[in-house]
Length: 175
Image (cartoon, rainbow, N blue to C red; front, side, top):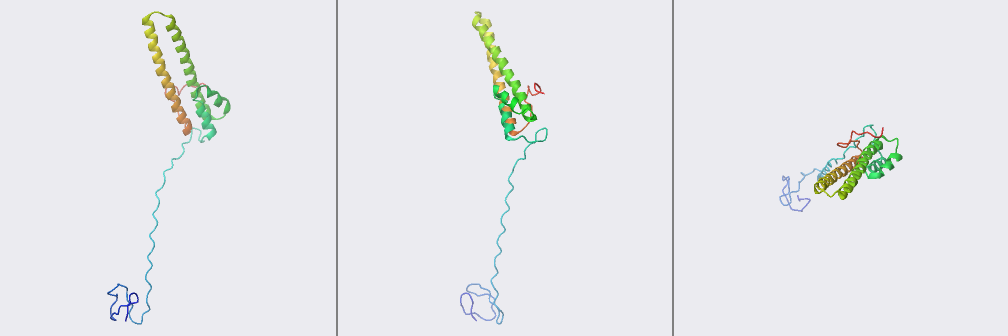
């Protein structure tokens, strides 16, 4: 008897070829095919995290046009565009209200700084000029706060959130 794989002469009672290890079928038995290895299962991909959109207060996600108009509400006098552009959108009106409050604060602050500068220019007293100069520095800090609130409002508008801004969020001008 010979090995079907390597052709080595082997004894009749051996089950495997000593040369190559091929299984040897007993005499008279049909040769069995080599088992086909099963393919390894494909790895299961890990789920990708996709954040769910946060619904706004009325339960409707704002579209991109409403988000753009809400964003414009925080850009100074551009607050007029959303005021007239989306009168019926609760989302846009919410952000427009906050934008109007910030714009009004900016205008009022600019007027105060102008009056302060006029008074400083006309007064020759050093003590009063120093005090008015400190007020101008304070006004600058308030302007930084207005800019920070505008940035927070823009982020909320882009994310589709109707979240009131700190300090001014409870002031209602639009109904």
